[in-house]
Length: 291
Image (cartoon, rainbow, N blue to C red; front, side, top):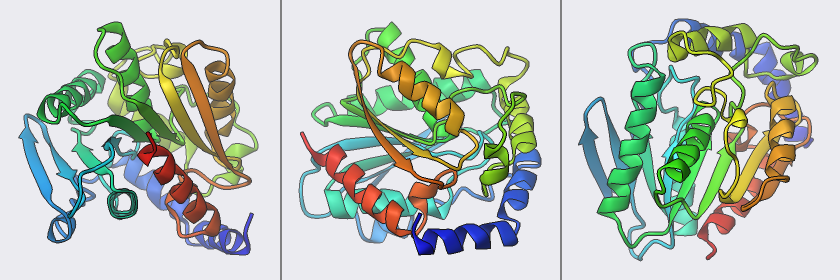
């Protein structure tokens, strides 16, 4: 771990970021974090699509044809919307790697439940496929958005729909059961708070069994996904489950895995201004932009 990352880790712990985020998960504000990239519209052509219960913003490179189209599903435990760090990541993909990025503002729990949110994601993907028929589509999901991405892949495969060319999963929430023993990762992670994740999941699942693949996609079909990259933190709460995902993806047919691990780093470390994240974001951008 770099010196900068070590210092930031201490600062996140001292400022109580984990506690603050846990409070937001338990009592989610009403779309306070719907931080839409209107300032990006001044730099890049942006197409806004209003849909029932949500919207999408598609950001394109200013002066050239995009080399790919990223369908991006944000994290936030299904209860929080876009944070500025998600917007910055999208900006890098557009500006540095000539990618088109669609930011999906899906409905949030507890106002929406698992069926409504997943149906919106599916319809949004199909809508963009129809609107941009010549684009090479990639899928990107972070944390809860990573789980939604995996569920979307399973649904697309089951219904014989066009699959994305590449999939990026950033610290995906692959198993919804938070009652298991997460020692010592529960203590190491400076972002995620296990009890608050349990509350957030209860807002989302509406009584559905936690082992259902729609909530815990690690129990679903992982085959024939094509090229998949997973970003994991060695010091994040989800790390044991991400290692399980790694083993499963390496065993199935039709899925190839690219693994990025931040040694000792916390959940969603990819978004922070540390050397490990900057170099990994560059690698990921080049990977998505390559044919």
